[in-house]
Length: 466
Image (cartoon, rainbow, N blue to C red):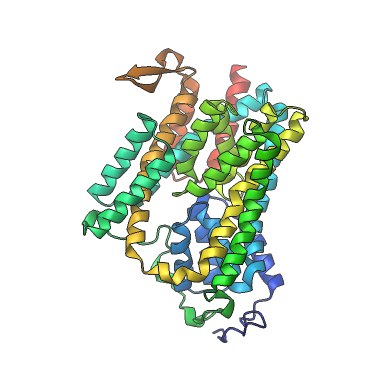
């Protein structure tokens, strides 16, 4: 049993016996192994930090997770920031959150450069042809997995259906759908409707391996640096707000609103504020805006980027780095395209992940006041239900553009609905997608293996068919 000691005073660090160097090594290990989306990443942190290292207890872990689930942005990275901050103050949060995205950033940047340089080569196109089938299966499995957890009442199912209709048929902006769902959940709970009772934390680990806070390195006590301090919160919040927004306003002032770098900074800053519900939810909106509005990508290229993000460690929302890279690669003027792409990818990553540190450092000391707020939990449950409908829209959008060579907009009652041109159906893509679906739903094949198999099948198809 670990000896539990009370946190040290304000003059020193928390007295838990965990050196900062050891924490850096552990966070680096977690970062390198953080495949499988938020559920897998949160389970990995739970296994290492709660079960193996016993640095933090089950109750404190779930406490932090509940708070992170209320925030926009990648909840797994925010959980890492929270626990790193809890253990080693601000520097701990910076290292934990920074390392969480660093391996994925480096890997995806390298893949983006390769894609931009050789994406037109037949062999590369064949590779991504098979990869798209795997991605489609992964997204459909995400609909099933999240839906089974989130849709536990008829009211939540209605919300999911309404969200799908709103975004797929009426093209309602994603932020408005999220805002409306949260408001419905909050009001529904306050009105006493059972359909909007507060949920249990999503992704919560099974209770059969609970580690009490008393038997952990951090213990039951709240470290002095983790107690509410309005002055500190305002200072750290202002610092990260400036780090986030000053580059955005400088680009706007120097380059103007129509420059591609300004558009990237503004668009992904907005995404950082409204990305409730995980990466799969916001990707539907990102894909439609990047393809249809800004012209940064072709529909198939969004699938390729998602496939690359699935096979690299770190948050899945890192796919936005690929979007920013390709947008700047194609539309920047006066710069070498590859250099512009690299700068676009860096800018996208900066404005996407810097706000995550802001949310945690600003609000974590006050998280105890949020923990018992059941009405906020009910609003989150309603948002999660709406997210299921948004992810279903994403799956259908991906399917249309990966299985069919042509998609046309059909006007119905003054509304344009995307429908496939059936004569353009790609039989090989259909067969590969069917095989990927069987692998995922019948044999529970993991995403990394599925992506590798899909890419290999695409290469085989290219070699056989020429």
